[in-house]
Length: 264
Image (cartoon, rainbow, N blue to C red; front, side, top):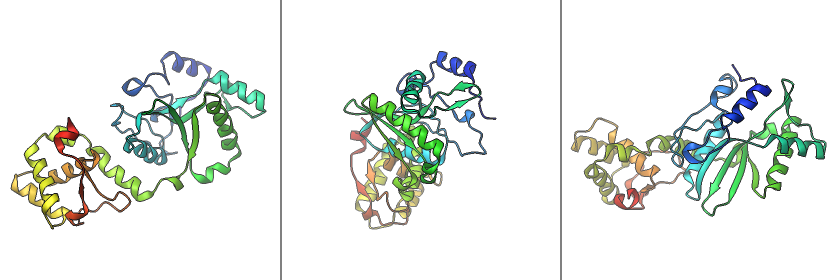
């Protein structure tokens, strides 16, 4: 059941510190429990940058989140970030735009992502299906949102599915959960064996991974998990715009960093 955001609920969330904090201490304004599962597919991945569970309310939000995770220029990701209600009401009154209002209450508006960049600046991004941008209510909401961030001197923009390459997003989805497998497995002999074979062999990747499982007596699929983790940690690289395929030749995989250097 969807959460009803009346004034009592809004004040309670403000008191709880929703929308405050940073990195692992950030509390999103909305959670997956606030949106009926029948309306969208929610995701709660563990963030690489924040070391906390993220609340993503649609596949599009999830894929854009993976895109943000992959970029080294981004330090912190805060999803479902609430806008100051007094400020958005003021903007609506000044511009004649209709402020979101439900349950006899002016609603707290939110931006899908507020991210902190390495240079110390922030960027605000909202994701939406392109077809929804023709909806009048969406246009009004985004107009208020745009003015809000402009007044704060923060870059704001809309990302649609058109800006997110499907294959790239799917590849990120495949490797993202494997990020910490290197730390959890912690067997440098196996890891270095895989890297060496990828560097020197003319075999296919799947043959090398199967060979690794056999040589070290590993459970089938262990070497594949490590391979995905090597990609997630950017120790090895593949063409992320080509469908993930372990049938490719090893010479199509690039070794970027020494394991010890990357994990230090």
